[in-house]
Length: 320
Image (tube, rainbow, N blue to C red):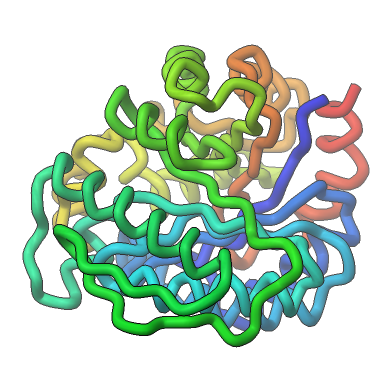
């Protein structure tokens, strides 16, 4: 049976609200929660981007049992992989073993801030694979020395290690990333319900491992208001991953989505209060073999009503 999660969307809420929302998600009955890890929002209208790892620490303390996951962290530009390993081990301890480390090769939007340029996808995947090797070595305990093509580690050791290392997920969008994930990850992460991604993941060694998807929704009792909000804050989504990973800032995303209409957004994102529509739009993930799907409720100020609706109507319908 597919498990249904909630997304703490750092780009649309302040840190206190994110923690309050994940507590509400647990109370509403969501099966797990994920958090985005950005330095920038996608568009200025979203208006936020707090530090995801601080929010995770607070969320681990504020919740009781809901599993937590990064969706996703890039361990190879803004962060050194040795530091990501330390952060992940600490969060795993804080939440008593309910943390999953979701990793990806990054977006220029967030990683450009360190001023080291933005290499081609092949190099980004090389860096990600090397970072995963370093993180796993540190999770295994003891001192780690590493001198690779992209990273150096000198006598690093994690002094606070959980009994069980966090599982590692890798985001996939095509053949190269699916092959990397199948070889190196404990689970697959994707934002498109494409069965071929899972097939490639399986062939590379991922058969039988979880697959975690994600879809934005815009709940509002007023359907036109839900469409307007989705268009205002999420029209960047129409660009596609190839474009999204390359653009350097909010102005570029605004320009690239300038001609995206509310109707275009409506065609990709379920909007309004119709439970059957939301279930219908989420079904492709189930059909494509995803074991977990995390929902993003668009609009940081509209979460309370969403949680009531999800508890009373959406989650029961999805589980039936």
